[in-house]
Amino acid sequence: MSDIPPLGTLTDRVVLKRKITTDEAEGGETAVFSALATVWARVRPLGTRQSFDSDARGQSVSHSVVMRFRTDLKAGDRIVYRGRDLEVLGTSDLNGRRAYLSCQCSERVVTG
Image (cartoon, rainbow, N blue to C red):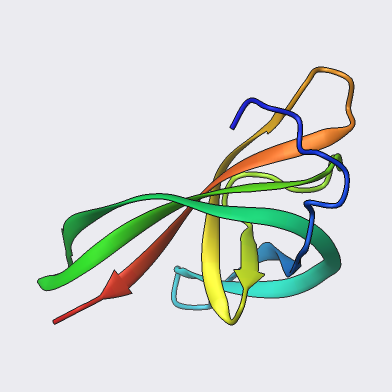
């Protein structure tokens, strides 16, 4: 979203999680998500589309998350909203003044 949120609209409590990867002895890597902060945000669903991932039917739901500006959130991290994991696809400074951060997120749900 490109509009600046009015005061008092950051009413959703979310947990920001950082993706930490470690190498395994077999040659792969393991990803773990560690809590970074709990902040107030505005979460809005944008749309849903059908997806086929790993031979399973599912849905991909896109969300827009707006919060106070911070520099430690990046693509690959997660935002936990009401027990649901939203993967951060990208972040941007909402108005160029480092007041608000807009995150484009995706949630994957397996339906069958």
